[in-house]
Amino acid sequence: MNQMKKVPARKGEPKTYSYTFALPQLVGLGAGLAVALTVFFVLGILIGRGYRPEAEVPELARIMPVPVPANATAPEPQVLKPEELHYMEQLTQTSGAAKGQKAEAPKPEPKPEAKTPAKDDKKTKAEADAKAKADAEAKAKAVEAVRASEKAKVQKAEAQKPKPEAKAPARDQNGEGVFDYVYQAAAFKDRDPAEALRRRIEGTGLKTALETANESSGTWYRVMVIYRGTPSSTDDMREKLRSVGLGRPIMKSKKPAR
Image 1 (cartoon, one colour):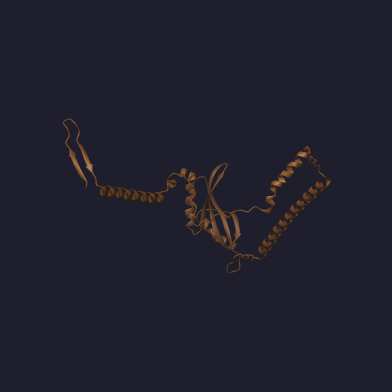
Image 2 (tube, rainbow, N blue to C red):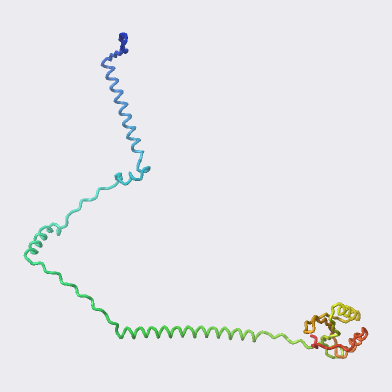
């Protein structure tokens, strides 16, 4: 039975305790310690298997042993071949024969002779150059032929296109030809009188235009009359110009009307 007795301490001395255990209690205490140590050992093994320090420290992976898979088969033992059994005897015989014979000095290897360019090589190179030149000329001729063929096709297509019909000159009811006339009615050094004359001419029903000309004597403003009609109808146009005080106008151009 476990008993604890308190031993009275003397004045000035520390307190002391004494324990008394029976045999069954000592056995039970030892068994409990053994079970606890066993549990700690098993837990240590389980935790140690799951922990891989080489995954966190790459340097350890180089020195750690490679685990052998459980299903790996052991390599089969190699058996010496019959010719390998006599290797030692052959080695002994060879060494004995070498001792009885004098070592011969190695013969120098013959130097390769320098090759000189042969006539056949020159001939082959000339033939290759001539062939390349002929091929280039043939390609150039083929390209020129293709270009000429394409040009001929374009010219043929242009020739086959229908040409626009030329319009006949316009004619009036009497069969007289109609023309577009441009006359110069007058010329001024100032713009204002030229504009005033234009307004007077247009008041008669004729069409006018103002043309500016830079000459050595200065700038001239020419009053031009634009008229379309037959040669016989130009008499009416001149009569209208005379009505505004103008003389005979100067014809600048005459073109058939289309």
